[in-house]
Length: 439
Image (cartoon, rainbow, N blue to C red; front, side):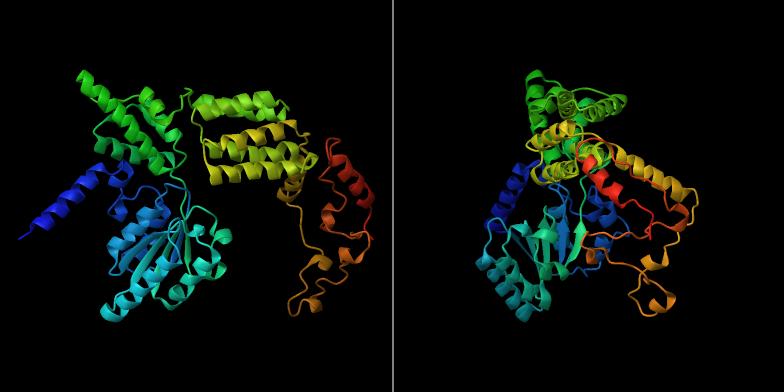
C-alpha cells in the first residue's frame, strides 16, 4: 500500500512532466521511437545492436544540437543493468567526477554492478578534467557516454578518444522533422497548416529540439486564440512566424532553384549588392543555411580558384562558422563570404583544367605510372625499378626539377591555363619557366 510520501512524489513527478518543455515530453522511451539517425538506431544499426545487447563500451556522440545525443544516452540508461549517472561539463568539476568514480567503485565492489557516466558537452572539460576520467574508462570502472557538438578530434584528448567509439549524428532531414512536428502537434492538440509546417521545418536547421520549442510557442498562440473564439486550435503561418520571429518569404520549389541560380550568378558576376539581396531572400524564406554555405564553398573553386586562393578558405570558414555559431548570428558570416567572393577576381581555370584532365582519363588513355614515380619504399620495389631515376625537388635550390610526371600518352598535354586575373599571372610566370621538355 502506498504511503503519503509515495503519493506526493508521484503527484509531483506528474506535475513536473506536464510542465516540462515539449521536447522533453516527447523524448522517446524506445529505440523504435527515435526520429532520424536511422543508420545508427534503425534495424541492424550498429549503435542499436550494442544497446540492445548491453555491450556498449565508452562512446562519443558527436553531432549538432537537437540531433538526439541526450535521447540516445537516456535510452542506454533504460536498456542496461548498469547504474546511470549524468553530468554536464558546463557546470561539473573534478570533484564531481571524483564523486561519480567513488560511487562507481563502491557500487562495483558491493553490488557487482557497473556504472555509465553520461557527460554532456564533454568538449567543455579541460585536459586535466578529461585526464581524470581516463583511468576509469581504461579499467572499465565506468562506461563513458560523452556528447559534444564540437569536432572531438580537436576537443577530446586523444587517449580518451582512442578508448571510445565515435558515433556521428547528422542534422535531422525534412521528413524526420515533419514526423517530429506531427508528434508534437498531437501532444499539443493543435492542427498545423502546411505553410506553417514548412516554415517551422525550414528554419529548424535540422535541430529537432529547436523545432519543438518553436512549435510549442506557436501552439500556445493558436490555443489562446481558440480559447477566445471557441474554434479549433490551428497553427497558421502567422503563428509560426511569431514563434520564430522570422517572416516567411513564400516561394515554391521552382523558385528555390531560380533564386539559388540568381544568387550564384550575382556573385560570379562580381555584384556584392545582388549577392546580398538573394542571400537575404533565401534566409527570409527559411532556406537551409547549409545549402547556402555549400554553394559558396563550391563557387570559391569553380568561379574564383587560383585568381584568389584565399576565397576557398573564406567560404570554408563561413561554413564552419555556421555549424559553430548557428543562426541568426551566422548570417553575418555568410554575408562576409558573399561580399568577399563577389569582390574577388574571377577565374574558371581550375574548373576547365579538371574538365580537360577528366576528359583524357575517361577517353581511355593508358595512365600507366612512369617507373621513376612509382612507390619504391617496399621490399622488392627496387628490383622492379620502381623509383629509379626519381629526383627529389627539394634537393634543387630552385625547389623544382625538370622531370616527367605525366604518363607517356599525355606528355605535353596542358590542362591548367592561368587566366590574366588576380593572382594567376604570377602563377602563369612560374609555370612558363617550368613547362619545358623533360630531360
